[in-house]
Image 1: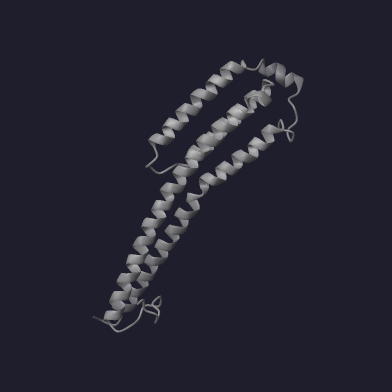
Image 2: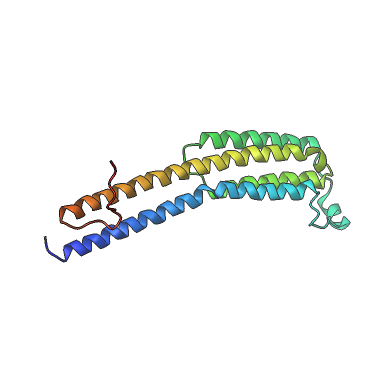
Length: 187
C-alpha cells in the first residue's frame, strides 16, 4: 500500500464519521420538535383560558361584517370530528416519518377552535374540550416524532460505532492506534 493512500483513507473515514455525528444531532433535534409544539399549545391555551387578554376585542363594524358566530353545537361537532380524524391519522402513520408541517397544522386547527369559541362567547364553557383534544393530538404527535427520530439517531449511532471499530481494527493492523482508543481494557 502506498503512503499517500493511508492519509486519504483516514480523511475519508474522519469525514464520514463527522457526517454521521451531524446526522445524529439532526435526529436528536427533530426528536424534540413535538415537545416544542406542545409547549406552544400550552402557551396558547393559557392565553385562551384568560380570554385572550393580549388581543383587543373586535370592533363592532368588523363583527357586523363577519356576521353571527356558528352555533356552539356545530363548533363542538366539528371539534369531535377533527379530533377523531386527527387521532386516527396519527395512529395510522405511527411508523412513518412525521412532518413538522403536520404538527403546525394541528396547532392551527386547535387555535381556530379556540377563536371560534371566543368569537361565539362560549370559550369558558368549551375550553376543556379544546384543551383535552389538543393535549391528546399533540401528545400523540410528540410521541410519534420522538420515537421515530430517536430510533433514527440510535441506528445512526450504531453505524458510527461500527465505523469506529472498523477504523480501530485497521489502524491496529498497520501498527497505529485509533485516537479514541484508551489504554484501559475491560476485564
